[in-house]
Image 1: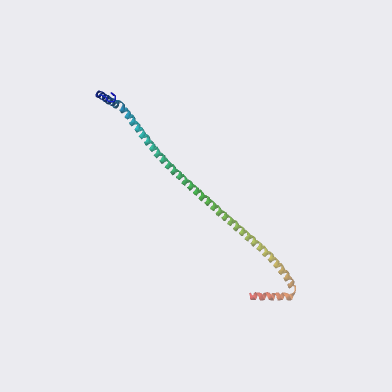
Image 2: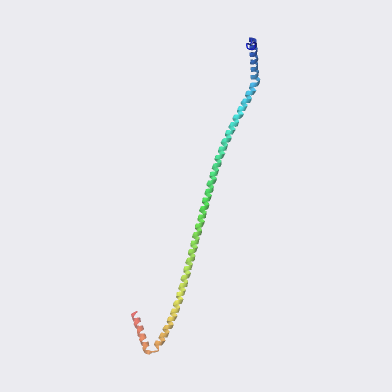
Length: 164
């Protein structure tokens, strides 16, 4: 029963031993253990801070990347718009130029047709006038052979001249 009921001396020396052990542990073991724990805590805090900074940097880079993508899309759209405008302008210019050239060719053809028409009419007039002169000459020869017909013709011509 001695173990269940300890004596005062045993309790005293056990308490003294325990206090000495605590002092020794405090002086030699707890400071390094607490220092190691404190260093570990600081390294964990630094790692968490670095992770947070990396997360913020990643978010910033992602936002910057999205901005760059939007700018690139806007530039692409602008370039495509300019190219379409340029294409439309070139097509319209080509159409206008083709219309102008077509109009010039049509006008030239009309002028050529008119010139040929005038030349043909002049040729027809020349032929008609020469035929008319031949016919008039033959008629006059036949009529001027007879003296009475000559006098009648002169009289008719004088009447026409007086009326005009």
